[in-house]
Length: 322
Image (cartoon, rainbow, N blue to C red; front, side, top):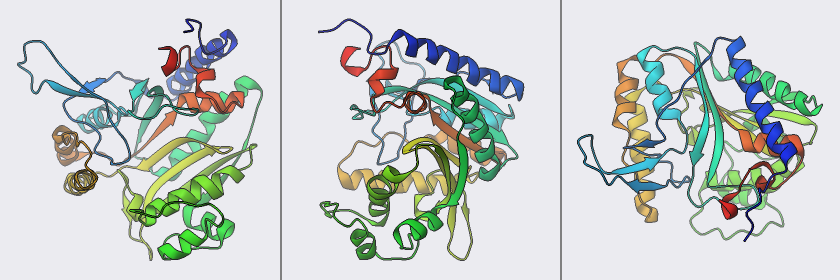
């Protein structure tokens, strides 16, 4: 049993400098820092994200005893936006069950921010600017490449991710062998990303991948092109995904449908289903502003800055030592 930190002191100091850089970046742009609850009555319904829950043991006058540890600060931040606060961000800890390993820790640091009146393309520019300022702390400066999701799959794999059938997607995995039981189109597309595309991303490049399949919309708007797309983006620093952003959905009725679809998938898989966030839906219905938002993994960013594949190297105490 080791009581020593898992990160070196130099890395702990770099994290402190990184946090100061993040806060200075937003202060210069008049984006307000806020703090929102870590525990909530509702949770994340995404079938691919597992949440921690806990029981409140005191006298209860404020709702159910069961609470969920946040997987991101997204829902309360959106309630602040609907109330009229304006541009804001939060830098804090989030929690995801079942994610412990070389690149994952069950608790980690997330930066999430929202820009009123912006779309996802504008937010890509700001996110890239922020990442460049952070990389300057370790003497690096990477070029930004922007490419549509569909174009990347066409150029790199010779397939159309929007229209080709599952057999085409499965064959594009080549010698990667995966048990196909229960996998849908989006699962195969994700496998192509993690096994064929991501490993080949140049280490000296920021890649902004945008306009995802409409089936992967999550909390993003869907644009009615010839082939509908979700106005969503992800940014990769080399092969590491560090940010995920949306031109945010502002329709409470549509968001409710997506939550219910998530719950149905969870029930079919035998997964626990957190309560749907009725307060978020009410906020969307009350007049949610046109805006774009993005979540950035600070630990992932530090890993990329230090060129380490181990998240333990950037944490004072990783999960095994916590």
